[in-house]
Image 1: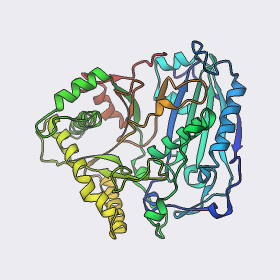
Image 2: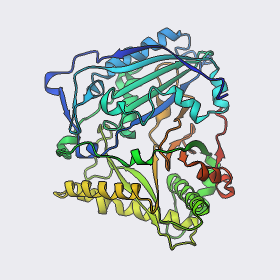
Image 3: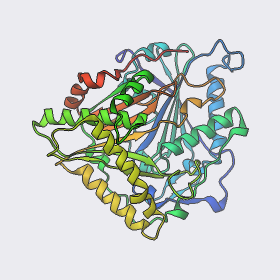
Image 4: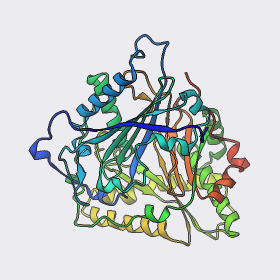
Length: 442
């Protein structure tokens, strides 16, 4: 499958906002939080089958009609997301000069059902318009879209947004706005670019990020925790400390334990291990920020297992994750709402960088995209049959996403080759997770 699948680029277009950006919106200042975000793309893949059984859907639309609809609605969406049609000027602002976003139309010589039988992470990279590590995120397009059409008429929509402009929540707001523009304008929720007014930027050059140093030879695999196995895992890790573990806490715990064990096998001794989890802060401020707050609004918790702690239980790791989450509001969010916001952000960024770049510990980044309702993205031909990701070159990263039913979790895990080999044979992990199962069509 991996050898036979070849995506062919048909054409590339520049999509500009349907209305020029007003003069008073020509410059968007980045927030302090945006400034410390690494130069990468935030990316996502949406896969759409031909829905022949639903008379309410535009399943008769040709490839050219679908492509035209995507481009037209994208142009209209960019009038609300005007910074995405601009370019980064430096690490303090975006020039909203309507240069446009890139739209790529492509074909692939296979059926969607064939791809979904074995959704190989490397093959899926061909369906994204750019690698997430591409330097273009700093110098070129802030938004790229690729529409890839299958022989059967199925469609893959790959989206890359500069992480300087968007975290997963902003990506979700963008997709909602774009799909609503294409189908039901009453559901449009326009973005609010308010970050710089709350977290004013400082004069700082683009810092060297841990992402650059974490790139090495690694592999990406997909592990799926189906809903019944998630329920069993949550029951197993429940304790007096955490009687009601969430799906994300339970999956984070078993992934972390597997990572610690893999590292111990590889080095022959135990090392400090940090399981850093991204936290969407929008709902944690008082009062909460709107869900359509556009930009980055992320913090991180970083539970640690020290090198001397050789004996530990899965329940204990989940307990450490919960403890850090509970203390997050007091230890970090509250500081951001006071006069010490600058010191808090700078101090945390320095601590995060030191941990990530140290050779004396194992540092993992876990980000959850669960509950973002990405399966609701309907452009007029039905909801996606699958929402996925692809391989990348940054090791020790786990991205957690909902399964189609909303109750399970798909994990896109990138590790060094030795550690991944352990994960793929770890009996405790495989009791609850399946390695890259097929995706069924409805």
